[in-house]
Length: 482
Image 1 (tube, rainbow, N blue to C red):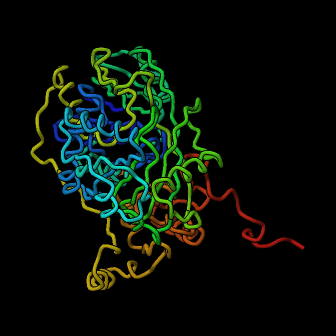
Image 2: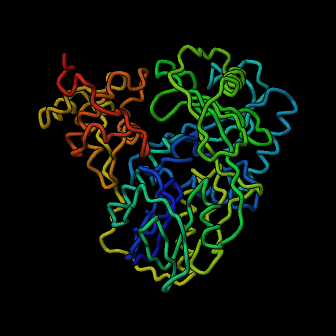
Image 3: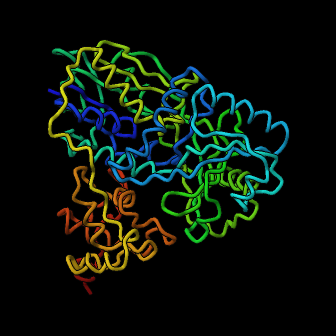
């Protein structure tokens, strides 16, 4: 029996799991997908927001500012990579500037750190590729960038190292009151727990409905992105927003933590919670709007496009409440959910404490997570020493990103199991370069079969059913009979 069962292994669920792993508790996480960070958390802007745009007095405002302040220390412990590069919200005319003044006033009420209204010359001196026709900007020096999936994976791995049990490919199918808490079903499997934390993102309304813990309606909001080659990654040095509109913080142009350039997202409400298709019209909208910020963007340098879904409610704010005794709902966690997640996790621990869960700190808690081995961050001397110790670090598998076999093997033997190509991609960056896996995918599969004792036919791109190979050819069986 678990003390706490968390449903959903996105950034919120994993942040709660890590925070609870500080205590002598039995904690489990149920995730319907094959990996952590496989839903909303894997495809968003990766921005650590400053917290100036939340409506004062709301959870979004308070947790956004509090969460922002935690990332430097979190990165020190978990080594996921955080660049406090700052952000600008650009105004193109006097009307936009009036909106910026409102944002600034909100930011002051929210206690956002390091914000100021700046003029055109200030922006162009720091970001020379920005449209010279801008009027002014709101600068936020406390904003930054991370990899959203690497952050989530780091939280999960650290929670796993501290004893949290992750059950992947375990979709929740029913929830009933039972024993001294809840019985959570996944098909024929039954998990008994005293407390439930519903962090199921896009499906948090469905999970709440199963337990009779409130009636919510999540409407997915799709955002499409374009990712550029590292060759143009230095086009901008900070996050560039446009003055926000009703349903979006505006199309952004931003460097990524890995050195690429990214633009997006647009915003479109959809009905399908699995709809990740991009459209010609949507991508054209993103490109057109982004060129308003940086006119010299060269679309021939785009290496891929993708879409993400945000779990939006009709109401503005996050919902964080113990709706039923021992059942905590975290619903409608859209932007700034990524930024807010560490502060939200601390608040959930407080809610569980108030609800009667005894909290006794572990004596052997491990706050630090060993970082992945990244040869691109090493000196030549360090790389040579690594190769002397293990020759697999001298064998380059992904040519675009210069990722070695040794780095892939490293990510395959962590506390969270990895059994898909995309899972390795999000950890070691193989298949992330300009060829998008055209060269290295077969070689990664060979390593997976050896290290994980898998059959080649079992390897998937992502979730169950997305197998890369479907069968053995006649030639593979020994040749055609004449």
